[in-house]
Structure formats: structure tokens, C-alpha cells
Image 1 (tube, rainbow, N blue to C red):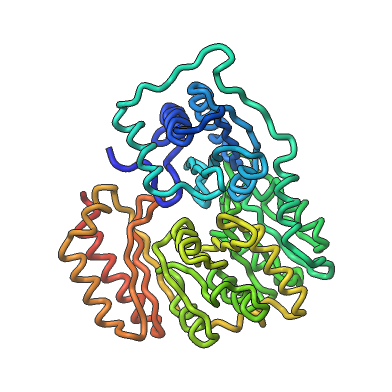
Image 2: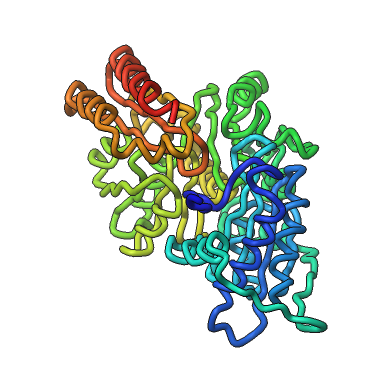
Length: 451
């Protein structure tokens, strides 16, 4: 069997790929690995998003944890970054979020955080995988009072909201904003949070029914939010994904403000206020070509990592950088969080707008976004592996790089969370980048789609 963990936990279609049996095994293995050397009874906190399958998988996961003697504190529906924060606040040994983020409702996932609120490093995930896949471990089977106990945190959402509010040293009174909760985790926290911060809020897509998470709403579907903002004369719109660890925006004119542009706005403000460690921003290889240009023009150092906010954070921790993120809207303010946090990002951006007195479109004008095209190809796991060694595919990519020269770039990579290979091309000539992306995609499909 292949790896279970991708770039953001274990993910798959709930009840067929990510089964109850697998969830239980992950619970047993995670408790065994993370409690190794622990001299006290380990405690896990568990949160989830609003998918219908989250309760089912949560029950199996909790059973696995308790069966090997770990206690569990159930947080209920909360954002992923709330789990990362509450691990520390509740003095737990680890945290688990049940969510498939921006994916459709039929998918679900399991992401694990260590006791310090960080996503697990690859080596620890590999130890958990070894126990599950090789089935060499005989798990301990406590009895009686040694079996793990389940308790419920009554104030998990409130504690998280208080944490985000403490980072926003400004009342948002006078700002009129639309907030799209993606019918996901933000539905449980965003209306209260931004209302208490003083903004005039218009709440959209905050009626989850277990099936409508991310459906035509949230950070992956911004058209309706943009229309709503323009039609109602609002200052901006904020959109979260299903587990609210990412945030994208639209300005008062309905223009999309993606993660790169949010980072540009916030990085420049942090630098000007002397709060950007070493004047450095950490992004990924998918950051827009224009973001690198923005950094050059404003005396900022830009470092690009592999895709995934975990890799951004690893670089930040390694060199003590304070700010970074992804084009997709995962933005990390390390002074306040250990992971990407959509609502924290939104609060910081709105405070910046209020403090500066500038419209979001004016703030976003500091960066020019280069045209970008993306082609997503459905490719099997075997095809994704073959991608790295297929000569014709790699020759085609090198040919594309030569055509673009220094005026653009191409990034081709297998997704770590979906059965996809993504072809991304950037440059100043829209027709050229679309032609190159389609040519490369055609070769990948011909060579790898049947594997």
C-alpha cells in the first residue's frame, strides 16, 4: 500500500476510502506513537467540520484512541486552527481535526497536531503509517478504569473566538463586510467573532446541513460573494473554506484578493511597523510571479518552499521568520498561531484597513498579479508516481521552461491531497501561457492517464 498521509493529513471519500476501520486504526496508532515515552495518561482534543461523515469518523477515531488508553476531549464543530490553539490551552498531548478542507462533502480527512499545536513532521507520520500498514504492532488493551475516557469541551468555540479577538487591537466599527462561511466550520465562530469586533456584517452560507459544505460557496467559489459585495455597496467580502484555515477576499469593486495579495498587503504593513522578522516572507513555489517582484521592489526577502502550509511553517521555524503563507489563502501569523488561520488572517486584514483608512482595492494595488493559468488533470496514484520518471513528460516541461525564459515560469506537480496533477503557467502573454499549459497537459494525459 502507498502512503496514507498527504500534504495535509489522511484524506479520501468517507466510508469507502477513508473508512471507519481506518479511522480507528489511525486513532490507535497515533496514540501509541505520540504517547511513546509519556509518563502520564495521554489526552487528545478532537474537532470537526460540518460534513455528515464527520460524526461517523469521529466516533471511530475516538474508539481507537480510547481503546489504547488515551483520553479524548471533544471540541465539536470548530475551525482547524482552533484545534491547533486549543491543544495548548487545554494542555493536551495532541489534537485531531476531522475535515477535508475545501473538498466536496463526500470527502473527509484526518489531520493530527502535536502537543505544541504544529502539524506532525513527516517522520512522525511515517511511524504512524508503519503501525497501520505493516500491522506489526500489538496494541495495548487496557481494561476497567484504564480505558480512555471521553469528555466534552463546552466552551471550545468561545475560547477560540477570544483568542482571535485578543490579536485585533482595533474596533472594526464603520466597516461593512460580507462573510461567506462556506457552510463549514466558520459558521460556528465567524458571525460571533466579527460581530463582537464591531463590524457591520452580512453572513452568507452559514447554514450547514452536512452536504452543502463548499458547495457553490466559500473560498473556492467567489463569484456570488463578489456580486453581493458590489450590489450592497460593502467595503469587502471575506470567504473561508470548509475548515476555515484559509481566507480569500474580494474588494469593494468585486475584484478577487488572493493569498499572495493578502500577504503583500500584510507584509508591507508589518515591515513598516518593524514587526516582520528579518524583513522576510515565506511563500511556496506556487506564489504568483508578481509576488516575487513585489518583494524585490519593497526591500523584502522572499523564500519559496514546497506547496503546503506545513512546509511554509517548517521554514519559518527553522530560520525564525514571523510571516508566510500560500496563494490559496493559508496565511501564518506566527506571533499568534502555529498554522494557517483564515479568521485570524481576516481579522488582521480588516484591522489594517480600519487603521489605514484605505479601501481594500487601494491596499491591494501594491502588487501586480501576473496572468496565471492552471490545468488540473485527474491522474491515478500510479500515474502520479510515474510522473517523476517519464522522460517525454519531463522533456515537454523543459521545453516549456525554455519558451517562457525569464518572462514567466511553469510549475507541474502532483497534488498531495487529491488524485490530480496540476499544471500552472505564469507570464505576461495570456495566449502563450494558455497554449503552453494545454500542450504540457496533453502530453501528461497521453503518457500517464491510463496508468
